[in-house]
Amino acid sequence: MPHPVRWALAMLVGFALLLVGLIMLVTPGPGLLLIFFGLSILALELEWAREINKQGVQGLEKLVAKIKSWFKKLKKDK
Image (tube, rainbow, N blue to C red; front, side, top):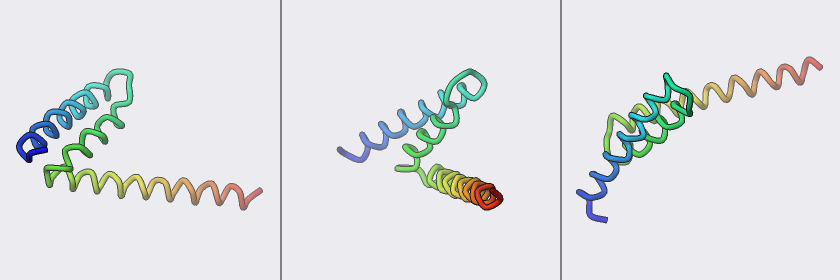
């Protein structure tokens, strides 16, 4: 796919998912998930979206590590 077409498609889909995700933060729906998908698509073409996406993944990895350590602690206490 030619670069200008790929860029335009990524912008359209990425910003649409980002906007719908922001709306779903205040209405029922998977807002955070759509924001993550929108940023992931935008990260294919935009540096600022790539950086935000990387920070989000690192934060998620820290959260998962804390939850795993909490479950290990609970299992050890039994």
